[in-house]
Amino acid sequence: MARYSAANAFDHSMPERTAVLLVQLGTPDAPETSAVRRYLREFLSDPRVVEIPKLVWALILNGIILNVRPARSAEKYATIWTDEGSPLAVHTANQARRLGQALEARGHAIEVAWSMRYGRPAIAQVMREMRERNVTRLLVLPLYPQYAASTTATAFDAVFSELSGWRNQPELRTIRNFHDYGPYIEALARHIEAYWAREGKPDVLVMSFHGVPRRSLLLGDPYHCECLVTGRLLAERLQLAPEQFRVTFQSRFGKAEWLQPYTDRTLEELGAGKTGRVDVVCPGFVSDCLETLEEIAIEGRETFIAAGGSDYRYLGCVNDSAEFISALARLVERHVAGWPGTAAEPACPHAALARRRERAVALGAER
Image (cartoon, rainbow, N blue to C red):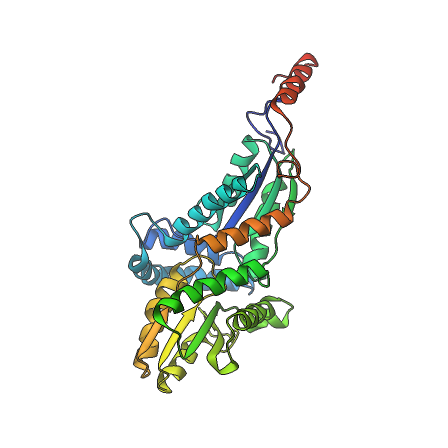
């Protein structure tokens, strides 16, 4: 068996293609205990996600977490599941489709595919499908606006690991973040302003980002700083005074200290303070998922109301809004500049590809 793999159906007449690979975190295949257990085992076994000694964590993961948490999480997934499937998968697929259309409308011949770091479609499988289509230029775009080792870096790890077994590797570019990218901030702002135009403005806007252990900040992870930058830029764009918004962190897990202030405690304080109306957005998530639709939209409301609050609104993610897709298209254009297949660099014409195949076959190639 060959040590390095290659495409099964390569032909010298095949055009060299440029592609974008969108990467999201992942989702179970179904809102069922067994499916959630498979997903959590893969997710929580990643050393980028849980940075404690492997043996110690294996005992905790297999002895407690995977025997208790899957059933609880499955119940939560069931509250947000749609007829089409997981909201995260549905939104990501729509983003890929609409981004491909937007790039084509701008004159680019660029494929767009999507994958999940954990679960399906797996990064390796999607990359192998690209290889069969002779993708020789690949831009990897993790759909995390803010860089974190536990999200962005592990997506890159998976891509690099897959390529390490390829005989014929593509030219590779990556996008590590877009937390301060003007068109993304504008897409967020317009999404919020459209809601406010219909419903009026709140007393306080809470910008809730996914949390990470505080230890990661002390070890050099830029995530916390990038979240604060996004929050500041969005507040400036919306012309909010300091007392009109909060930047918080959600989804803490375990007993260790995570980034603060915590979203749930902030909502308790706002509720107890009889804040008239609180709106919540999640600028670190580009697609609605369990952490937004259940933790923020449902649990967050319950926390706020139980503490004494009365009017709570979750505004939703940008998902596949026209403004966000336009921002993604502009981001991709910036990073594929100079590659064939872009509007400025047309791909090789079919006649030239046919002649290339003829020459290759004449020299002994099979195809």
